[in-house]
Length: 453
Image 1 (spheres, rainbow, N blue to C red):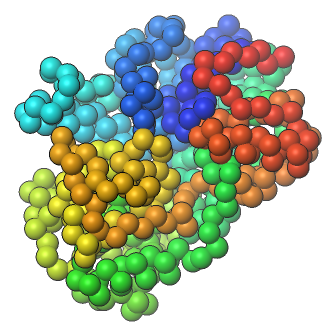
Image 2: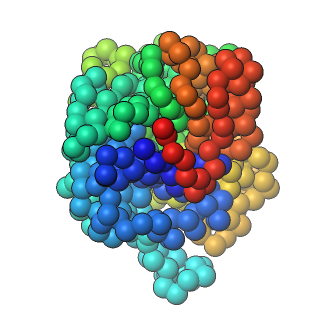
């Protein structure tokens, strides 16, 4: 079994791991690089092999840093099956076309306003490319070993994190490889905890929060205090949020706070993301995959006004009374939230509330880091609003929770590779596993090739 790290090695995005076994080629995850420009440029370089030579893809989950390169893969010749859980297939059916649409929209906007260095600016792929890729999806259930290719078996286990997220076990050539995927929290308000695993010969382990612990404060209470403080100064709370999981957790908390009378009853709440609106419906479809009761799921879905049209979105920028606006994307890399940042970030009455991990080089990371201004659509936008970063709501296991998940192994893997983390986080987790568990462990490097005996 041969393994090559083509992404999320030395960085936290672009998950791609090429597995060559039983005479076949499998790509484990197929994500977009995000953040720093030198990382984003990798998306345009293609892969070190022809996509037509690839036999299958297996996804851990539907977030774009794990699935977002699939439209380009299919456009460039891939014709195998894309395996994922049913919920991940449903979410990819929303996220991928939206990603293509946004890229086309941003390229058109750049060309019309003339702020791109490229002439013309082009999308990495189109909405049509994404819709074509969806034709190759093949759902797999949890806990059922499936032979996806001759001599190659796959088993998916719940990983928490988001709806449909899986840890992926692949057996071939007498070797068992386990990819943790993005591990969820032990006490996530919506998702069930990640399922532990007893055995694997080799392990790929995510390390997004490998160097820290999440704050102990109640995130619902922190959210309540931030919003009420902003309301008191007649301001607007803008929350850049990932359309999958983060937007739903926010709406669940807001539903609970309004029901308890802890937020003004007439405070308007807007979910300005057609994609997040559609994703919320998927949570209703897969109710057995999360913790919420029917009543809680309905309350979460109804607490916010769903903004779908561009005209409605533009009108939100004219708001002058207190409100809460949740809009994609979570790291302010694109989407409708950029227009809200331009409208509300310069005003000190308002609040910009970031509720998730901000990859290095993203606008979100710059704003949270205290940048006095950020560049949006070719303009420098001053950041005078209050900026709050809430690590409390992360959907990623922290270092203690990762070690707790590892305690399920009855014996150490032959070797564990740390992936999907910034260098400091990845190395901190490596040191901790080495010192506390005495396992053979190393941090994977981009383009590293290893033989799994």
